[in-house]
Image 1: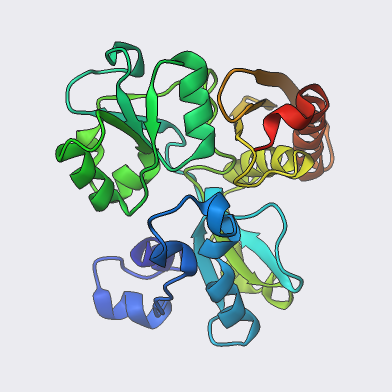
Image 2: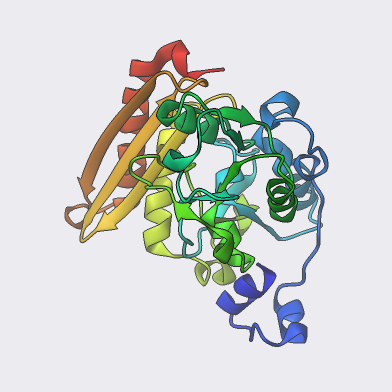
Length: 297
């Protein structure tokens, strides 16, 4: 990830010294990284992947932070902002197993490993017979647990597997319209202090298409007051000048699903970013009105 950001800033990613000079890396281990035996909702939510990093930024020890956008809470600490969103990787969920090619092919009562409440709810909506097991840890840990037989199948973000060169492990990919991924999945968030938002180096990290799509998805997340206690999926894509968005929320057990789909003709608007956020907010509000308390754990 350091090499990718450095390359966007003009460094040669094959030259380690140049990469380190342009984007020196400071590794910060967060509470979310350290605690691996419980779901995030049990220990404080998505903010546990960002808390220590954001403290370092507010104290001036680092200038920016690179996060997985799907791990970013809907609301950020005062004084911080998402200043740039680089071009997104493939946002789909990946299905991995010790045999079957698709979720539908798993035998009755198969064990599915995931730490995501959204993935749990979406899979139980499609396959209520599955035995969903809590599975946390980094990608290598989860793959090892799958190989050891602790689960019959697992779901992971395809983007993360691609970045690690592990996409060959994937059996199939989940349709992002039928089962929308987490808002912002596959995208990176460059978080900075508000005062640094307009610095020249930030502009080189921005992908306008990804920024629009993520703005719509996170607009829905904010409207739904999304957290680790709310199974929310959102997927936006551009087709010509049209921004399309599907938003859904489910009951944690997957028995109920609430969906809304919409589109906005951005080519006719003077402020496409505001329109993207508004589209997400309106669809998110509609899903929330339909789902009510049923979509909160």
